[in-house]
Length: 171
Image (cartoon, rainbow, N blue to C red):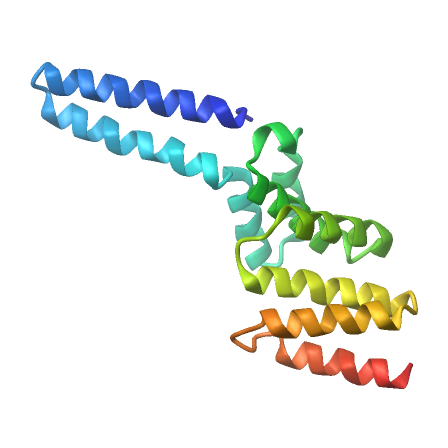
């Protein structure tokens, strides 16, 4: 696991060597090296282990996703802020199956750090609303459900939100 700044240093060195290749009239090598450096720049913003964990989650392979996330030992040093949010979001999704108290901590930290997509933020708030509902905190659950409904612009979570509101009426 590379520190996030090492990826930028590697990209800078590859770009410098690519420019050197241009000055030596090796245009093909220079173009290849410039394109190759974009991989390290991409991996600075999108961590490779988080991408692999998302791929595992798409296949509903929670142990596999947990394995990929376990490779990130120090998220503060290895990830940019948004990726730290997704790190906590993924941990919250996996832990929510077994430990709601720990899942609540992860989701709150993910929301505080920030998530790029409104759908992910809506899902995190929906999960927090469910946790608040199980702990009999109806006011907090209602507020979180309303926020999740505002963030769900494509109505992907419409049925889940409606179901949770119906369950809250029974409380």
